[in-house]
Image (tube, rainbow, N blue to C red):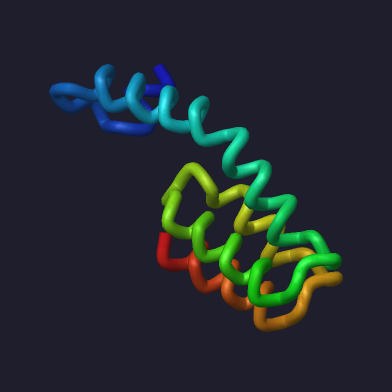
Length: 90
């Protein structure tokens, strides 16, 4: 039912759903590590910004992490704005 809800019952939807699930499963540790790097206040802002941009390159699978970063009030406003802008684009 979830596949029907997400993909609107088109040919090849099962394959797309399996590919998406595998991509999410493979990327999860990387996304978590990048999220930790992006929120690590001991790192220079430039390194945190780079982690945010890499998350953006990972696409939809990183949206939750980017939303968390965008709402993290401890981070610099520019870092939060970068995460929010990337989230809007995705």
